[in-house]
Length: 615
Image 1: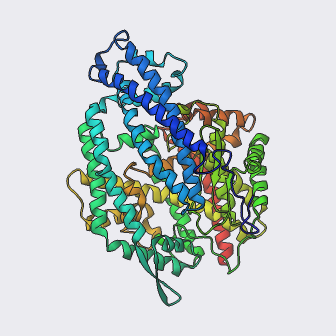
Image 2: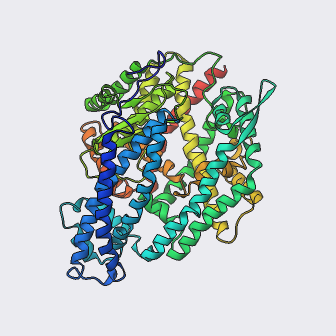
Image 3: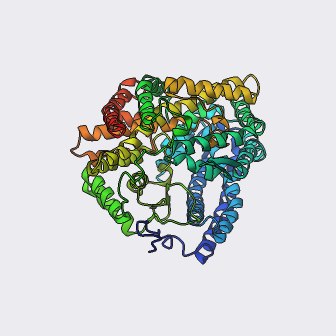
């Protein structure tokens, strides 16, 4: 175990998965992947020969295809398990040391295998989507494939949208130098931008990532200077950005036209929610705008301002030059989280201590570590890992609690088949936000001064603003942009105007000025593999708070029901999950409104704390 500073976290143990990036175990896994790929090629050939007539096949005529499909499924699960673990191991190494040459070499070695995996997986997807219901049932009537029932049936809901195998393969191949190339261009551009930032009368030129870090500064003028410098830098490249975002959207819209779908169909399906549910949560968010705007104005007031600035999205709670709360040593953070989780059920507290004892948490401080925090898992060992940089702040404790919630989600699913581990992004934040809420409440109880309390409640208010105002702003822009893009590409000035209008609609008079270039500087709009990477955050935030509210109402036997809910996230839709475990209809506003009501008293308390600080 290594410690980089007194309050820093522990380093994680990866040796239980692979001793090193160039070990014989990794070579053995690659050899097994080669053998699995050869076997998959053989069964894929059988499936390809049947796809043209798949829709008219009877069970008897499809007998060889059903056998091949079952074998392809089993082989695919085995191959993807190895691929996942190798990629996870490489990414874990590079997270701790971004210059790790062995990790980079391993990731590069994987690229050809990932490409081959995609190619051999497509015939099985095509076969299962196209065959009649009776043939699909026959495929599932085997103990090896039965666990995939939901995955298969959910995919088949969009079966009529599939193009031919040749067309799907061609589109996938062309995408590498088409839609994905535009996404890579944006990534490369963002990595080269520099910003001229003014601080204490001096101007210095720094990178975009470092400038973005200044948005966390407690000095309002520093944050505003950084935000304006970022916008100035992006404004010099609006032609490139507009070309990229128009090309990405244009590609998707062309595919929608060929499939006969709406541009929201794919993201809704991927998130396993209905359009009615999306419309309802957006409607409830709009109803909640006054509360969120009030929180924004209170944050502005804490900084001695009338209105909230777009540079205030990540602003910390203001303090009188000193830390609002004392640094929390890592061991104490583990104790706090374990006790908080244990207050729900002792088994949850034991899980936190197991994660620490097994050294499945990376929390050290290092100059070459990547920023951010995440939870991942190794499929073969069924063990989770949590990554972050722990420096001792209350926000670090909450971040650790959040990621341990993800880990707990994976842990309760560890005995399930791999095909049942894949849940929609909309549900992904359920356990994490639940854990975060539990620990935030514990930190609030132990806070000894109003300033320390403000630091905790500030983050609640920040989350409300982000999820109720900022996320819908992103959705509003993206939806309006796609509707306009169906007619023609949009010019940079039109994109700026569209973005500003979305900010004004959601933030209203709480906002000092809109952020017209948010469309250019927000990576989410340029992720070529995902569209509408926004509404799932709103859903997950409100859904997890709804689960927490049910915990308070039904404390007896809560953990068993909670674990059952988490286990089912990979094998049902969000609506069915809520109906089964929360007695809630997500397409109606009552559940969502009830969740919002529990936040009103916290904003009242936030106002009290801000008033105390101002006084």
